[in-house]
Amino acid sequence: MANMANSKVCVVTGVTSGIGKGAAIGLARQGCHVLMVSRTQERGQLALDEIKSLVPGAQLELLCADLASQRAIAQLAESLKANHSRIDAVVNCAGTFSYARTETIDGIETNFAVNYLSAFLL
Image (tube, rainbow, N blue to C red; front, side):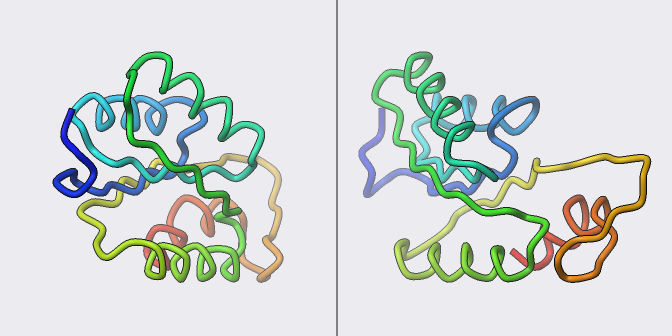
């Protein structure tokens, strides 16, 4: 496993299930420092613990942000800039789906805000 100074630093959203969790596992296995973005602390911690059990010595960091909130995304970006001298990759896997039209706190249709806009804002 590469040491942290030489590791690629990768942000992965949607790490609690599916492709996001798979991407985080794959990057951890390659020795990357994975910055795991989860909407909730509880689900994020479960994913982090699972990945650590699969990849002993994995370099993981959990960050929580609701990607349906532009303010939360901006706060996440500021935290990333403040705590990391570089980001080598961002893997946007977070997503949502609802048949019913709902809007975010910012007044944007939720599916569009999370699945599309959040990646650009981040």
